[in-house]
Image (cartoon, rainbow, N blue to C red; front, side, top):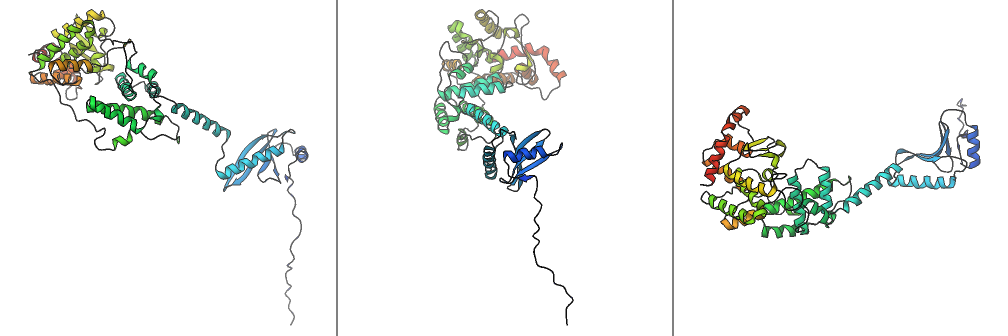
Length: 440
């Protein structure tokens, strides 16, 4: 039985495929012919037969050599520049080969990326070349809202770290530190800060040593955050100390004050020291004013004679200088007037009430003077203890709490403005009562 099934031919179709006219080996002659034959208008793309991914594209009127190839699963496109009859195709192929290799390895950067990298390296190099003082200056420039007293605290921290000591004729502490600092902040280590801390706890209160470390930490952290993302940083020179038990712990809240039976003798010792020092007794008179007013140190030391009205008998401190953000107007008592009159004789009643001994600023630090008075009076107190002494004495003398707050610049969180205003006419009487109790 014969089959009617005709077997299919197994012969392969050897018909040659039509060659892509836009794919050929790039030579100067071939490219010149292709460009001449290209249709007018529109985008035209020629592909190099010798190097996969190398193309010549017409964009508007220009012919541009470029790379267009799938690499690591993604289409990569990159321009190699305009094509002219003078273009060196050998150089172009070598450049394209290097670029595609870099893309595969993940190391390729565009010109914009290279420029950004160079800028990043330059910024890092500039930051790493900064001294502690220069880092402080950069912090001041970029943080104008920070209080001057905070900046001075930071400057004192740098001075202690580098053992910088001011001499007569030197500028104020901030410009002094910026100019004299030599320690590169990038070289600051945990050993440096630990040695400074150990030195300080032998000669200063633990709170002062802790504050100094916090000052160094604030400057270092600002400097580290200025580095571009991903830039290498040295180890935090404070971090190791904060993890050790007993290191840089927050000091306990102070409750110090001059004992009631020692207040008058302390005041007399301070007055005698001010008289003894004469013109140089401004620092002692500043301490006396703290004792007699209960003002915060920075608020009193930055007093300007424009804020003192001896005829009206008032001191007025604007709200921008007050911690509670409210204007303070308080009466001048009899002993306060004596202190201010004495200080006016030496300053002429112009500028700062308590000018600094060096430079053009005001007095910022009274600790050495306070220690000297304490030694004479056999009392151990700090500047803020004088404020606590004033407030505690006022409470003992049964002065209304609202009046005390108005006199010392405490926040009025529990009374209305109308009630506070009703207390103001009686402030001179209450201030006199407190002063009498202080000196009893």
